Image 1 (cartoon, helix red, strand yellow):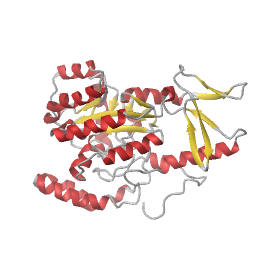
Image 2 (tube, helix red, strand yellow):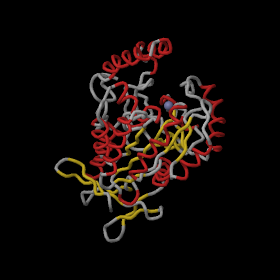
Image 3 (cartoon, rainbow, N blue to C red):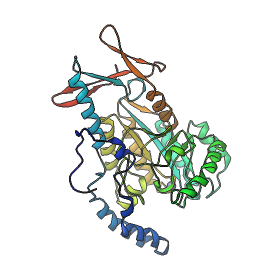
Image 4 (cartoon, protein in one colour):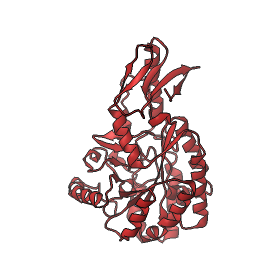
Length: 371
Ligand SMILES: [Zn+2]
């Protein structure tokens, strides 16, 4: 999509068009990018990165989705609330709070372990999180390398979650329908074997039309906006949403590899800017960091800095992805009823959900999240 930005106030505006990436023209994947991935195995690593960086400058100029922030669905939600507020008698629109217990925003930490050097580095990354009292999910590739079962036990014992990162990391899972169908029973078996409920596709390859078939509680393979991945695009959402029963937890911060290798960043400014915007709009900060790229002490220091920044924000709900997915499913079933005293209460749930209110203040939509 190029040219004028979509008008979020239009009556026929359809969020699914963005959530399910229907705005992408699948037939016109960039020839240059396809060529890059075809030739990549033949090119020395130093030259790969130089080519990739040169191409990144071009990718960043894409008009839609904007990067690092694409606000279209946040704006659309505000427009819907504005309509409800203006139609209400008391100038406010009640809704079930985004997060449990009146929390302002949510953050999760996730890791994709790409290969043996990543496996060897798990404990160093874990140590950084432990210092902040944080927990994370670890997605492993079942058929590319072996993992000592003691490492799984250790991760679980520290409160972390295990997830499935494809079957192999060849990026072909979504290449054709037959391959995907044939992979589903295998994915189910590995999820069971690892007592896991979450899935992330290698290289964030994905197809919105098929995700509902994943035998998982949640998927986390859709960036909100990412022009740099082998499959560029994004669901434009900083909130979870559904593919059938499968909860999607969108990846909302730029990946470590993109930030440090492709864009050559030497600071976490981009992470801070984006996570602050998400927190301001009450969304989900979903971090991906690969232990494979966290080898140098400087990288670990930058990750430590991000964790310090996220921990310092007031009103955050820090949870495991599986907890967020379960909450989002429960929340979906809740409704709101008016009470005789002119207030509202949540119907269903077990007390963790609160009524939030949207109001219009000086033309902007403001939230009161704690009922
Ligand atoms: Zn991966």
